[in-house]
Length: 391
Image (tube, rainbow, N blue to C red; front, side, top):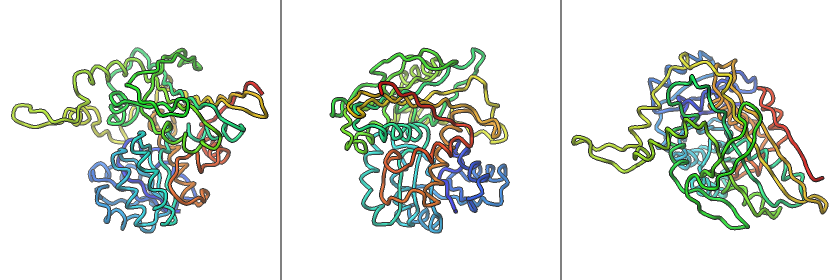
């Protein structure tokens, strides 16, 4: 199959590209980005005959559509802000599509493109990384085994790094993190969508070592937008997403947000108009050559837990579906980019190979078979465990 990666020079794209290079079913990989020097450096570093590249702005819909014309599937690793324009190019080129997430509001807009994707004869999926992505399919596994569903609770907790950790290293895109820290979030409660302020809904939970006992908070996420839609036939009443990032990182980012670095409103600095958020991103997300990535740390772990409660044959049953995420030493890759990029690669390959047959635009819980997906994750040692109580 032939696969394309938009944002191919980005940090979150690298695990997906590695997977495509190594997978025997992928014959050609097209990397697209607007950052020419960074993209060329990556292509040189990867040194694969499978890879081609083009310098294209994701907002140039017609040029992007021409580049994607002969490709089976496209993985969009740019910011969620570009999801809709890249989707438009995929409709024009009739290329299957997925991305790393729609952060609630964008996801809702993306789902409205279902009929256009269906008419184009292609499949689109919003959110194919870790969360959204893995957690959606984990929830689907449990929902399929219940007669009715009361609630889906998603808990995502990262381990605290060792005291010797230095620097300010975002686990994923800083722009997305700033939205999560500053934008109102949502819970689906008793069948209604409820808007809540950032860092609301504090909940304490115990995770396997070395993560341990952690406080988690509501964050804006697309799972809350999609699961009430796709699990409606099971009568779902409640959906929540809560996150616990490392305490030191959280405190530092909160402080920067309090200073105003999350603002998108231009300010005047010595006669020059600058956007505080853009300044912070430029300072933090400096390009690092793939050959200079820091080695994985033993304490770099993340726990995903999806708790689904409902009824089975008249009895109350709860499924706890869990996965411990880790660095991938073969690729010298930290947990964050590996656990986002590799699951996204799995979904892209399922799309490109035609194993996802439904046409239209969906979230992963609607169209991805959990058993097939989990088997693919296990090939790179991401494993899912299930605990069932009440049956």
